[in-house]
Length: 428
Image 1 (cartoon, rainbow, N blue to C red):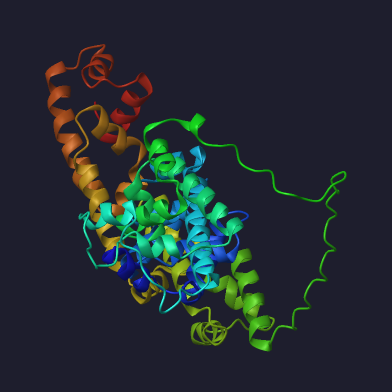
Image 2: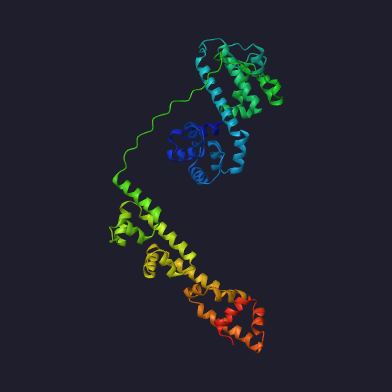
Protein backbone atom coordinates (compact mmCIF):
# COMPACT_ATOMS: atom_id res chain seq x y z
CA UNK A 1 0.00 0.00 0.00
CA UNK A 2 2.78 2.42 0.88
CA UNK A 3 4.72 1.79 -2.32
CA UNK A 4 1.62 2.17 -4.51
CA UNK A 5 0.93 5.59 -2.94
CA UNK A 6 4.52 6.69 -3.44
CA UNK A 7 4.38 5.58 -7.07
CA UNK A 8 1.17 7.55 -7.60
CA UNK A 9 2.78 10.67 -6.15
CA UNK A 10 5.89 10.22 -8.31
CA UNK A 11 3.92 9.76 -11.55
CA UNK A 12 4.69 12.79 -13.72
CA UNK A 13 2.00 15.13 -14.90
CA UNK A 14 0.77 14.16 -18.42
CA UNK A 15 0.69 17.85 -19.30
CA UNK A 16 4.48 18.04 -18.84
CA UNK A 17 5.26 15.31 -21.39
CA UNK A 18 7.55 16.46 -24.21
CA UNK A 19 5.36 17.83 -27.02
CA UNK A 20 7.84 16.69 -29.65
CA UNK A 21 7.59 13.08 -28.43
CA UNK A 22 3.79 13.34 -28.37
CA UNK A 23 3.79 14.57 -31.98
CA UNK A 24 6.19 11.79 -33.01
CA UNK A 25 3.98 9.16 -31.37
CA UNK A 26 0.85 10.65 -32.96
CA UNK A 27 2.41 10.18 -36.38
CA UNK A 28 2.82 6.41 -35.75
CA UNK A 29 -0.68 5.84 -34.29
CA UNK A 30 -4.02 6.46 -35.94
CA UNK A 31 -7.05 7.83 -34.17
CA UNK A 32 -5.37 8.32 -30.80
CA UNK A 33 -6.28 11.48 -28.91
CA UNK A 34 -3.68 13.69 -27.28
CA UNK A 35 -4.91 12.86 -23.77
CA UNK A 36 -4.42 9.13 -24.46
CA UNK A 37 -0.95 9.75 -25.89
CA UNK A 38 0.12 11.82 -22.88
CA UNK A 39 -1.31 9.24 -20.44
CA UNK A 40 0.75 6.51 -22.11
CA UNK A 41 3.96 8.58 -22.12
CA UNK A 42 3.68 10.07 -18.62
CA UNK A 43 5.00 7.06 -16.61
CA UNK A 44 8.07 6.61 -18.87
CA UNK A 45 11.49 7.57 -17.55
CA UNK A 46 14.05 9.57 -19.51
CA UNK A 47 15.88 6.41 -20.62
CA UNK A 48 12.61 4.78 -21.69
CA UNK A 49 11.67 7.87 -23.68
CA UNK A 50 15.02 7.67 -25.47
CA UNK A 51 14.36 3.99 -26.24
CA UNK A 52 10.91 4.92 -27.54
CA UNK A 53 12.37 7.51 -29.92
CA UNK A 54 14.66 4.86 -31.41
CA UNK A 55 11.80 2.36 -31.71
CA UNK A 56 9.53 4.88 -33.45
CA UNK A 57 12.11 5.27 -36.22
CA UNK A 58 11.75 1.58 -37.10
CA UNK A 59 9.11 0.32 -39.51
CA UNK A 60 6.91 -1.34 -36.88
CA UNK A 61 3.16 -0.86 -37.39
CA UNK A 62 -0.11 -1.82 -35.73
CA UNK A 63 0.66 -0.47 -32.25
CA UNK A 64 -1.29 1.98 -30.12
CA UNK A 65 0.09 4.43 -27.54
CA UNK A 66 0.21 1.88 -24.70
CA UNK A 67 1.79 -0.70 -27.02
CA UNK A 68 4.58 1.73 -27.86
CA UNK A 69 4.98 2.44 -24.13
CA UNK A 70 5.48 -1.30 -23.53
CA UNK A 71 8.12 -1.37 -26.29
CA UNK A 72 9.91 1.49 -24.51
CA UNK A 73 9.93 -0.59 -21.31
CA UNK A 74 11.72 -3.46 -23.08
CA UNK A 75 8.84 -5.56 -24.46
CA UNK A 76 9.52 -7.00 -27.90
CA UNK A 77 7.65 -5.45 -30.80
CA UNK A 78 6.11 -8.82 -31.76
CA UNK A 79 4.74 -9.32 -28.24
CA UNK A 80 3.30 -5.78 -28.15
CA UNK A 81 1.64 -6.33 -31.56
CA UNK A 82 0.10 -9.59 -30.34
CA UNK A 83 -1.22 -7.81 -27.24
CA UNK A 84 -2.65 -5.03 -29.40
CA UNK A 85 -4.48 -7.50 -31.65
CA UNK A 86 -5.85 -9.49 -28.70
CA UNK A 87 -7.28 -6.35 -27.04
CA UNK A 88 -4.96 -6.54 -24.05
CA UNK A 89 -4.38 -2.78 -23.85
CA UNK A 90 -8.09 -1.96 -24.28
CA UNK A 91 -8.97 -4.36 -21.46
CA UNK A 92 -6.22 -2.91 -19.28
CA UNK A 93 -7.46 0.63 -19.87
CA UNK A 94 -11.02 -0.42 -19.06
CA UNK A 95 -9.82 -1.97 -15.81
CA UNK A 96 -7.91 1.16 -14.79
CA UNK A 97 -10.85 3.43 -15.63
CA UNK A 98 -13.19 1.23 -13.63
CA UNK A 99 -10.85 1.26 -10.66
CA UNK A 100 -10.57 5.04 -10.88
CA UNK A 101 -14.35 5.39 -11.04
CA UNK A 102 -14.82 3.11 -8.06
CA UNK A 103 -12.24 5.08 -6.07
CA UNK A 104 -13.85 8.39 -7.07
CA UNK A 105 -17.32 7.19 -6.07
CA UNK A 106 -15.93 5.95 -2.78
CA UNK A 107 -14.46 9.37 -1.94
CA UNK A 108 -17.60 11.24 -2.98
CA UNK A 109 -19.87 8.95 -1.04
CA UNK A 110 -17.68 9.17 2.03
CA UNK A 111 -17.78 12.97 1.88
CA UNK A 112 -21.57 13.05 1.42
CA UNK A 113 -22.35 10.75 4.31
CA UNK A 114 -23.72 12.07 7.65
CA UNK A 115 -21.19 12.89 10.33
CA UNK A 116 -21.32 10.64 13.43
CA UNK A 117 -22.54 12.18 16.62
CA UNK A 118 -19.86 13.14 19.10
CA UNK A 119 -21.51 11.77 22.25
CA UNK A 120 -23.27 8.81 20.70
CA UNK A 121 -23.17 5.87 23.19
CA UNK A 122 -21.42 2.73 22.06
CA UNK A 123 -22.83 -0.65 22.79
CA UNK A 124 -20.48 -3.45 23.75
CA UNK A 125 -23.14 -6.08 24.28
CA UNK A 126 -23.82 -6.90 20.63
CA UNK A 127 -22.54 -10.27 19.46
CA UNK A 128 -20.62 -8.68 16.58
CA UNK A 129 -18.67 -6.40 18.89
CA UNK A 130 -18.04 -9.11 21.39
CA UNK A 131 -16.81 -11.44 18.63
CA UNK A 132 -14.47 -8.81 17.23
CA UNK A 133 -13.15 -7.71 20.61
CA UNK A 134 -12.46 -11.31 21.55
CA UNK A 135 -14.28 -11.09 24.95
CA UNK A 136 -17.85 -11.87 26.04
CA UNK A 137 -17.53 -9.65 29.09
CA UNK A 138 -17.50 -5.86 29.40
CA UNK A 139 -14.57 -4.82 27.26
CA UNK A 140 -14.71 -1.04 26.96
CA UNK A 141 -12.46 -0.81 23.80
CA UNK A 142 -14.29 0.29 20.62
CA UNK A 143 -14.98 -2.60 18.25
CA UNK A 144 -13.05 -2.67 14.97
CA UNK A 145 -16.13 -3.31 12.80
CA UNK A 146 -18.29 -0.79 14.61
CA UNK A 147 -17.13 2.43 12.91
CA UNK A 148 -17.74 1.38 9.28
CA UNK A 149 -21.03 -0.20 10.25
CA UNK A 150 -22.20 3.07 11.74
CA UNK A 151 -21.12 5.28 8.83
CA UNK A 152 -23.98 4.81 6.42
CA UNK A 153 -24.20 5.78 2.76
CA UNK A 154 -27.34 6.58 0.81
CA UNK A 155 -28.99 3.43 -0.41
CA UNK A 156 -28.44 4.10 -4.12
CA UNK A 157 -24.78 5.03 -3.51
CA UNK A 158 -24.22 1.86 -1.46
CA UNK A 159 -25.74 -0.36 -4.14
CA UNK A 160 -23.64 1.24 -6.88
CA UNK A 161 -20.53 0.88 -4.77
CA UNK A 162 -21.37 -2.79 -4.18
CA UNK A 163 -21.88 -3.40 -7.91
CA UNK A 164 -18.58 -1.74 -8.75
CA UNK A 165 -16.70 -3.82 -6.20
CA UNK A 166 -18.32 -7.03 -7.43
CA UNK A 167 -17.33 -6.07 -10.97
CA UNK A 168 -13.70 -5.68 -9.93
CA UNK A 169 -13.79 -9.04 -8.13
CA UNK A 170 -15.26 -10.67 -11.24
CA UNK A 171 -12.48 -9.14 -13.36
CA UNK A 172 -9.45 -9.79 -11.14
CA UNK A 173 -10.70 -12.90 -9.28
CA UNK A 174 -8.19 -12.07 -6.57
CA UNK A 175 -8.73 -9.90 -3.48
CA UNK A 176 -5.15 -8.50 -3.27
CA UNK A 177 -5.36 -7.39 -6.92
CA UNK A 178 -8.66 -5.60 -6.25
CA UNK A 179 -7.12 -3.88 -3.23
CA UNK A 180 -4.11 -2.84 -5.30
CA UNK A 181 -6.36 -1.45 -8.06
CA UNK A 182 -8.27 0.61 -5.47
CA UNK A 183 -5.05 1.58 -3.64
CA UNK A 184 -6.43 0.21 -0.40
CA UNK A 185 -5.05 -2.23 2.12
CA UNK A 186 -6.58 -5.68 2.24
CA UNK A 187 -7.96 -5.06 5.73
CA UNK A 188 -9.67 -1.84 4.60
CA UNK A 189 -11.18 -3.68 1.64
CA UNK A 190 -12.52 -6.44 3.90
CA UNK A 191 -13.98 -3.84 6.22
CA UNK A 192 -15.80 -2.13 3.36
CA UNK A 193 -17.09 -5.48 2.06
CA UNK A 194 -18.49 -6.23 5.54
CA UNK A 195 -20.12 -2.81 5.68
CA UNK A 196 -21.80 -3.37 2.30
CA UNK A 197 -22.68 -7.00 3.28
CA UNK A 198 -21.19 -8.44 0.11
CA UNK A 199 -18.05 -10.09 1.46
CA UNK A 200 -19.29 -13.64 0.97
CA UNK A 201 -20.58 -12.86 -2.52
CA UNK A 202 -17.32 -11.13 -3.50
CA UNK A 203 -15.07 -13.95 -2.36
CA UNK A 204 -17.36 -16.48 -4.05
CA UNK A 205 -16.52 -14.75 -7.33
CA UNK A 206 -12.81 -15.44 -6.77
CA UNK A 207 -13.55 -19.18 -6.57
CA UNK A 208 -16.50 -19.47 -8.95
CA UNK A 209 -17.20 -18.50 -12.53
CA UNK A 210 -19.01 -15.77 -14.42
CA UNK A 211 -22.44 -17.31 -13.83
CA UNK A 212 -22.29 -16.15 -10.20
CA UNK A 213 -22.15 -12.51 -11.31
CA UNK A 214 -25.46 -10.75 -11.72
CA UNK A 215 -26.27 -9.28 -15.11
CA UNK A 216 -25.41 -5.65 -15.61
CA UNK A 217 -28.32 -3.24 -15.15
CA UNK A 218 -29.64 -1.51 -18.23
CA UNK A 219 -28.98 2.21 -18.06
CA UNK A 220 -31.62 4.56 -19.28
CA UNK A 221 -30.76 6.20 -22.57
CA UNK A 222 -32.37 8.13 -25.37
CA UNK A 223 -35.34 6.35 -26.89
CA UNK A 224 -36.19 6.31 -30.56
CA UNK A 225 -34.33 5.41 -33.72
CA UNK A 226 -30.61 6.06 -33.87
CA UNK A 227 -29.46 9.28 -35.43
CA UNK A 228 -27.11 9.25 -38.35
CA UNK A 229 -23.87 10.97 -37.68
CA UNK A 230 -23.36 13.88 -39.93
CA UNK A 231 -19.86 14.83 -41.03
CA UNK A 232 -18.45 17.92 -39.46
CA UNK A 233 -18.05 20.88 -41.76
CA UNK A 234 -14.60 21.09 -43.20
CA UNK A 235 -12.49 23.80 -41.70
CA UNK A 236 -11.12 26.45 -43.99
CA UNK A 237 -7.44 25.84 -44.74
CA UNK A 238 -5.13 28.14 -42.89
CA UNK A 239 -3.58 30.79 -45.07
CA UNK A 240 0.17 30.33 -45.06
CA UNK A 241 2.22 33.49 -44.86
CA UNK A 242 4.27 34.28 -47.96
CA UNK A 243 7.81 32.83 -47.79
CA UNK A 244 10.64 35.16 -46.93
CA UNK A 245 13.39 36.04 -49.36
CA UNK A 246 15.77 33.55 -47.77
CA UNK A 247 13.20 30.75 -47.92
CA UNK A 248 12.43 31.52 -51.57
CA UNK A 249 16.13 31.44 -52.41
CA UNK A 250 16.57 28.15 -50.55
CA UNK A 251 13.65 26.56 -52.42
CA UNK A 252 15.05 27.68 -55.76
CA UNK A 253 18.50 26.27 -54.94
CA UNK A 254 16.98 22.98 -53.76
CA UNK A 255 15.06 22.65 -57.02
CA UNK A 256 18.21 23.36 -59.04
CA UNK A 257 20.21 20.91 -56.94
CA UNK A 258 17.64 18.19 -57.54
CA UNK A 259 17.68 18.89 -61.28
CA UNK A 260 21.40 18.97 -62.12
CA UNK A 261 22.87 17.30 -59.03
CA UNK A 262 25.87 18.48 -57.00
CA UNK A 263 28.00 19.21 -60.05
CA UNK A 264 29.82 22.48 -59.51
CA UNK A 265 30.40 23.24 -63.18
CA UNK A 266 26.70 22.95 -64.08
CA UNK A 267 25.57 24.81 -60.95
CA UNK A 268 27.99 27.66 -61.63
CA UNK A 269 26.82 27.94 -65.23
CA UNK A 270 23.12 27.99 -64.24
CA UNK A 271 23.52 30.48 -61.41
CA UNK A 272 25.94 32.82 -63.17
CA UNK A 273 25.36 35.22 -66.01
CA UNK A 274 25.50 34.19 -69.66
CA UNK A 275 29.06 33.24 -70.48
CA UNK A 276 30.26 34.13 -66.97
CA UNK A 277 29.80 31.19 -64.55
CA UNK A 278 30.23 31.70 -60.85
CA UNK A 279 33.50 30.89 -59.16
CA UNK A 280 33.68 28.13 -56.56
CA UNK A 281 33.90 30.68 -53.75
CA UNK A 282 30.82 32.57 -54.98
CA UNK A 283 28.91 29.29 -55.50
CA UNK A 284 29.63 28.07 -51.98
CA UNK A 285 28.75 31.51 -50.55
CA UNK A 286 25.36 31.38 -52.33
CA UNK A 287 24.53 28.00 -50.78
CA UNK A 288 25.86 29.09 -47.38
CA UNK A 289 23.60 32.16 -47.37
CA UNK A 290 20.55 29.95 -48.05
CA UNK A 291 21.51 27.47 -45.29
CA UNK A 292 22.21 24.66 -47.78
CA UNK A 293 25.98 24.38 -47.48
CA UNK A 294 25.77 21.10 -45.54
CA UNK A 295 23.29 19.59 -47.98
CA UNK A 296 25.54 20.47 -50.94
CA UNK A 297 28.54 18.99 -49.15
CA UNK A 298 26.79 15.71 -48.37
CA UNK A 299 25.40 15.32 -51.87
CA UNK A 300 28.74 16.13 -53.49
CA UNK A 301 30.52 13.63 -51.26
CA UNK A 302 28.02 10.85 -52.05
CA UNK A 303 28.22 11.55 -55.79
CA UNK A 304 32.03 11.34 -55.85
CA UNK A 305 31.93 8.03 -53.95
CA UNK A 306 29.36 6.56 -56.31
CA UNK A 307 31.22 7.62 -59.47
CA UNK A 308 34.55 6.41 -58.06
CA UNK A 309 33.09 2.95 -57.44
CA UNK A 310 31.27 2.93 -60.80
CA UNK A 311 34.36 3.74 -62.89
CA UNK A 312 36.71 1.49 -60.87
CA UNK A 313 38.81 4.36 -59.47
CA UNK A 314 39.36 5.88 -62.92
CA UNK A 315 40.17 9.48 -62.11
CA UNK A 316 39.83 10.64 -65.72
CA UNK A 317 36.36 9.15 -66.17
CA UNK A 318 35.06 10.54 -62.87
CA UNK A 319 36.41 14.00 -63.70
CA UNK A 320 34.84 13.87 -67.18
CA UNK A 321 31.42 13.00 -65.73
CA UNK A 322 31.71 15.88 -63.24
CA UNK A 323 32.79 18.27 -66.05
CA UNK A 324 36.05 19.14 -64.33
CA UNK A 325 39.75 18.30 -64.58
CA UNK A 326 41.49 15.57 -62.55
CA UNK A 327 43.27 18.28 -60.55
CA UNK A 328 39.94 19.92 -59.63
CA UNK A 329 38.53 16.50 -58.73
CA UNK A 330 41.41 15.88 -56.33
CA UNK A 331 40.91 19.33 -54.79
CA UNK A 332 37.16 18.78 -54.28
CA UNK A 333 37.74 15.33 -52.78
CA UNK A 334 40.22 16.83 -50.33
CA UNK A 335 37.79 19.62 -49.38
CA UNK A 336 35.03 17.09 -48.70
CA UNK A 337 37.35 14.79 -46.74
CA UNK A 338 37.01 11.72 -48.97
CA UNK A 339 40.50 11.67 -50.52
CA UNK A 340 41.75 8.97 -48.14
CA UNK A 341 38.63 6.92 -48.71
CA UNK A 342 39.10 7.07 -52.48
CA UNK A 343 42.76 6.11 -52.14
CA UNK A 344 41.78 3.14 -49.96
CA UNK A 345 39.29 1.99 -52.61
CA UNK A 346 41.98 2.26 -55.29
CA UNK A 347 44.35 0.13 -53.19
CA UNK A 348 41.62 -2.46 -52.71
CA UNK A 349 41.04 -2.68 -56.46
CA UNK A 350 44.78 -3.13 -57.00
CA UNK A 351 44.90 -5.99 -54.50
CA UNK A 352 41.92 -7.64 -56.16
CA UNK A 353 43.58 -7.36 -59.56
CA UNK A 354 46.76 -9.00 -58.28
CA UNK A 355 44.77 -11.81 -56.63
CA UNK A 356 43.08 -12.96 -59.85
CA UNK A 357 43.54 -16.70 -60.38
CA UNK A 358 45.77 -18.11 -63.06
CA UNK A 359 45.21 -18.75 -65.87
CA UNK A 360 41.63 -17.78 -66.85
CA UNK A 361 41.11 -14.91 -64.38
CA UNK A 362 44.51 -13.33 -64.87
CA UNK A 363 44.53 -13.62 -68.68
CA UNK A 364 40.90 -12.38 -68.96
CA UNK A 365 41.63 -9.15 -67.13
CA UNK A 366 44.81 -8.55 -69.15
CA UNK A 367 42.88 -9.03 -72.40
CA UNK A 368 39.60 -7.20 -71.54
CA UNK A 369 40.36 -4.74 -68.72
CA UNK A 370 43.49 -3.01 -69.90
CA UNK A 371 42.18 0.54 -69.43
CA UNK A 372 41.13 -0.12 -65.84
CA UNK A 373 44.45 -1.81 -65.04
CA UNK A 374 46.31 1.10 -66.62
CA UNK A 375 44.40 3.55 -64.37
CA UNK A 376 45.32 1.43 -61.35
CA UNK A 377 48.99 1.33 -62.41
CA UNK A 378 49.31 -2.48 -62.48
CA UNK A 379 49.00 -3.18 -66.21
CA UNK A 380 52.72 -3.47 -66.94
CA UNK A 381 53.25 -5.71 -63.91
CA UNK A 382 50.50 -8.12 -64.95
CA UNK A 383 51.60 -8.05 -68.61
CA UNK A 384 55.08 -9.20 -67.62
CA UNK A 385 53.71 -12.02 -65.51
CA UNK A 386 51.36 -13.26 -68.24
CA UNK A 387 54.11 -13.03 -70.86
CA UNK A 388 56.56 -15.03 -68.74
CA UNK A 389 54.13 -17.85 -67.89
CA UNK A 390 52.67 -18.07 -71.38
CA UNK A 391 56.14 -18.03 -72.96
CA UNK A 392 57.15 -21.11 -70.94
CA UNK A 393 54.12 -23.03 -72.17
CA UNK A 394 54.59 -21.85 -75.76
CA UNK A 395 58.20 -23.02 -75.79
CA UNK A 396 57.19 -26.55 -74.74
CA UNK A 397 54.89 -26.84 -77.73
CA UNK A 398 57.94 -26.69 -80.01
CA UNK A 399 56.37 -25.00 -83.03
CA UNK A 400 53.72 -27.67 -83.63
CA UNK A 401 51.14 -27.14 -86.34
CA UNK A 402 48.26 -26.99 -83.82
CA UNK A 403 50.30 -25.15 -81.16
CA UNK A 404 47.77 -22.30 -80.82
CA UNK A 405 44.90 -24.73 -80.25
CA UNK A 406 46.92 -26.63 -77.65
CA UNK A 407 47.83 -23.35 -75.93
CA UNK A 408 44.16 -22.40 -75.72
CA UNK A 409 43.28 -25.78 -74.15
CA UNK A 410 46.05 -25.56 -71.54
CA UNK A 411 45.11 -22.00 -70.59
CA UNK A 412 41.33 -22.68 -70.80
CA UNK A 413 40.81 -19.94 -73.39
CA UNK A 414 38.31 -19.56 -76.19
CA UNK A 415 39.74 -19.60 -79.74
CA UNK A 416 39.16 -15.83 -80.02
CA UNK A 417 40.97 -15.13 -76.74
CA UNK A 418 43.82 -17.43 -77.75
CA UNK A 419 44.32 -15.47 -80.98
CA UNK A 420 44.12 -12.17 -79.09
CA UNK A 421 46.72 -13.40 -76.58
CA UNK A 422 49.05 -14.51 -79.40
CA UNK A 423 48.86 -11.08 -80.98
CA UNK A 424 49.34 -9.30 -77.64
CA UNK A 425 52.47 -11.30 -76.74
CA UNK A 426 53.71 -11.66 -80.34
CA UNK A 427 54.03 -15.45 -80.11
CA UNK A 428 55.63 -17.06 -83.21
